[in-house]
Image (tube, rainbow, N blue to C red; front, side, top):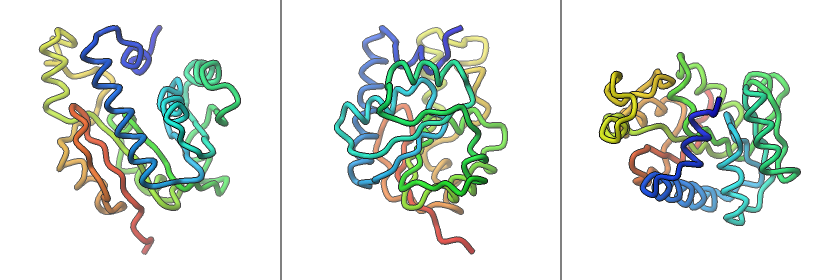
Length: 199
């Protein structure tokens, strides 16, 4: 069964392809701004974003982790030796004492039943920056509905258990992170932020 992430990145729809291409460009611009030497893609899926950053010429050491064996296998086939890719939980990285200049978590938090529990984990893992994105609601659902997707759910993806508007998402992360940039990447909210000092 093809994942929703794979369907999104390999869509033949020209509008969706253009939106995804813009998403990748904006992400690469924020990564360049932060200039990390080490990057963790948490919930990397099939590796599309690591591949996009490599293609954009981002010079960093990449690590990608995901809970899906199939997604990591696809990512390894796509990226090869250009990134370290593992099936792993974020908590294991924390337990191992790992940290990275930047942690990316792109299109993941909307899937997590208790997303607030991820914020201190992200803060532990990220030495300097996080790059986060979530669908921007209610627009994301509305666009799905208008193109005939998930009609019985009013456009809501069945895998999405959290829904944020742009301001609401920034408030959600504000306790643990200071937002540095939030470019318009419709229909997503994307933020570059830095961890607040620990109490």
